[in-house]
Amino acid sequence: MQLKSLDHVNLRTSNLDGMVDWYCTILGMENGPRPPFPFPGAWLYVGEQAVVHMVGVENEPDSIEPKIEHFALSATGLADFVARLEKAGIQYEAVRVPGFGILQINVFDCDANHIHIDFAPDEADAAGL
Image 1: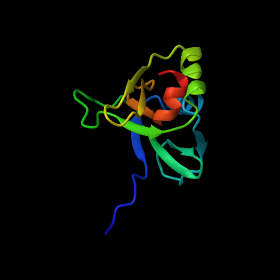
Image 2: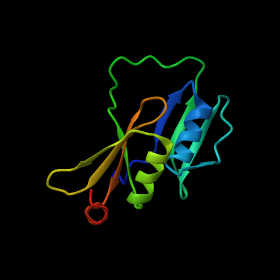
Image 3: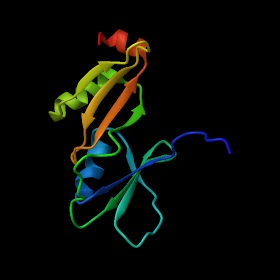
């Protein structure tokens, strides 16, 4: 067997509508086709790939110390993304990866999941970040 890539992340949430709205509005994903599972949920797409699967649950999932600290997505359009975050009043932290030059924009979704969006060094340089 040879692994190719990470296929998707699955999030449980008691705030399904709010989470779908956040991922579509802030990250630009699209709510797309999902199998007819017998429970509420959504599949959020980047192009043809459903990269975030959500499962609606009745009660907020318990979490003391998360075992998954974050998940990351790569992107282009750094200046537009930062402007979208600022317009929405979403706090973020921009961090350069030492030795690689990649710029990570760290954000938290409306359920407090940590996500970082990675931008290429040349785009970060051009934006002055």
